[in-house]
Image (cartoon, rainbow, N blue to C red; front, side, top):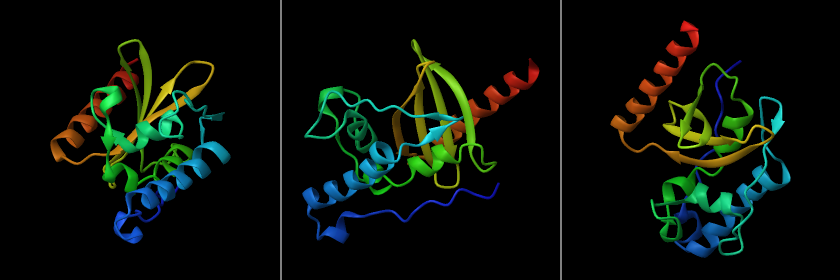
Length: 163
């Protein structure tokens, strides 16, 4: 399978710096990719965490486009917003050899990570056994963080092949 083609990023300057217009355009991409045309991972259509609604938008959208450790204090993350078109093709093409896919546990959560190394972009899914939720996705800004994910992936692959 060939490389995953990602769309061009969308930037706020394309909207004259108007955040509201930019946010609505980014949301339109999310709505098309996750509400109208849901991605498929390993043959399963993804669910969507719709609640709580944040500013009239599904919670998953909020997690894909905002950052911060304290849930109700997350702020818009322009790098995440610019790349809103990335998650769906990455999820849909997760079997592509150019993507790195692995699983891990975060607390009680079973997570699926899909890394597009070249784009330095990570998609995280939450495996709920009966269904899968898109959890978050983001641009990996720092090389040391990318190296951390690559190391985690290698450790996963080595453990899987050792079994």
